[in-house]
Length: 256
Image (cartoon, rainbow, N blue to C red):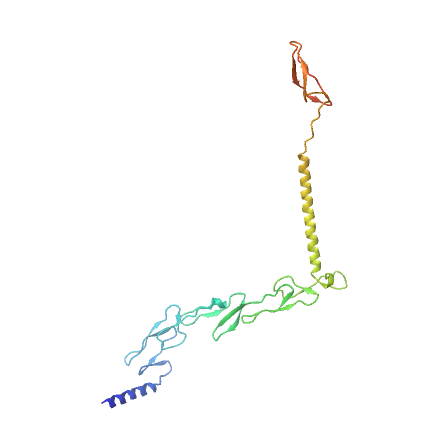
């Protein structure tokens, strides 16, 4: 009896190994079951009397081809540390596609999408953009040729220096094109400082003049300023009466 059971088991295993399912089918035990469509997964395998039971993938999972999977694949998360952002959103039938944000290019391309993004090189003043970068290549910068310059970031061409005479481009002493700008800048700063100083001096002089009060003039020998003693005919008393100053002398006012 044990030999018979062993023979039956070997026969079944041999049949399972020799099971050759057709296109759109997958092996499940001794059966070839119909596959689930993309965006679905197997909920229950087929039997001799029933077909495969499929259900949709839930959010943040997917299957992108007909399958016999019992679980949907999780959607990929783009690595922020590698400067990656979702370029193609994940759906039930498609995985996330990662790409680069604005100002970056993909420096490492994987089998499906980008794996690493880097910032574009900036061409600074004194250079120009020779080749503009693409989604997978960086900018190519080149120094300005002799006799030319650039003052802005990412210029597409350099500008010739202005000519002061027919002898050549207007460059500073020693052939340094930046010396002219340095001299002009210093002269402008000195002129501004002198103008500000002159303005402060003018305001100070005006305030000084407004605050000046001349001393009062007093007649020689007049005793107390602005007063004189007047005699009273009736009682013989003398009373100090204010006297108004007119011209160069004092006018006495007698009490009647």
